[in-house]
Image 1 (cartoon, one colour):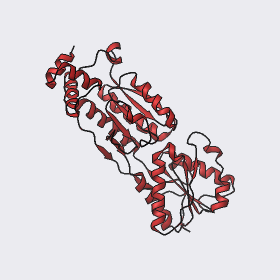
Image 2: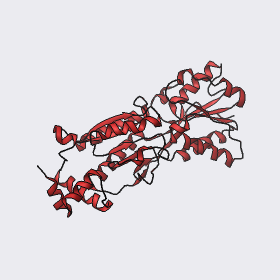
Image 3: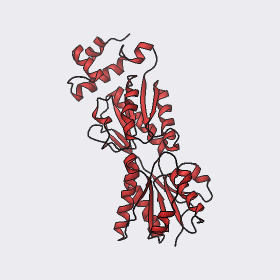
Image 4: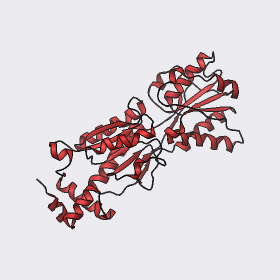
Length: 326
């Protein structure tokens, strides 16, 4: 069995420094942390005090997502698990239910098992308390990198929001309403709305006040009667596909047809949108590829001492039958 002394010898440091580097406590340079972690990975060292060491089971990583039931995160999670299976790691899963207050407790629960690293999708990294605590190697998934966590796998949500709005403008729409989950619960939704605002401003069109609703529950009972009466939109952009389905249902309850009366578009590109009649117009996000990329990046950082980096993955606009020219 590999010992900590062997790791320290391979890394060319003292036993105390090797311990601090692996446990991330005390003052150790980033360069030395990478050297020690590389040595540990090369020698197959696992701390005896970790859950894996005590129980003789394989190492694990922790994954935090907003919702296990959302197909977007389920797709990413499946790719993460597949990649980690090949690497011999288990995967611990926690969800925040789009509640920033629950994120710290969820991450603390993941850290209890001394994971090799973390993959986190946070409500908003700019306001999250999670990133101010001591963390193992960590990759943000769907969130932009921060000074505390520079490793991230993202798409350009602002650009996606701008491109989808530009499509509707080219089709003749001028009164475009943005319906979204609460911006405080998702920086992805906020960035998509910012792209919408940029496109409207570029064409000299006023932005309509966004309709924000909770992410968890209520999509099937969405009531847009007040917004339709106030704004008379010819098109509605929903911040995600599940919400777009809720918007279409709400419009039908108002006796309106999609796209004859109001066009509807969303984000994510989940499979059920292609099975609708008509198929949903959406920005297709590479969720599976993003999950696999995040898992590979985390393993490189944790076990090969590769520096943190930001990977930006391309999205695709998929034109369906839920929008029309006017």
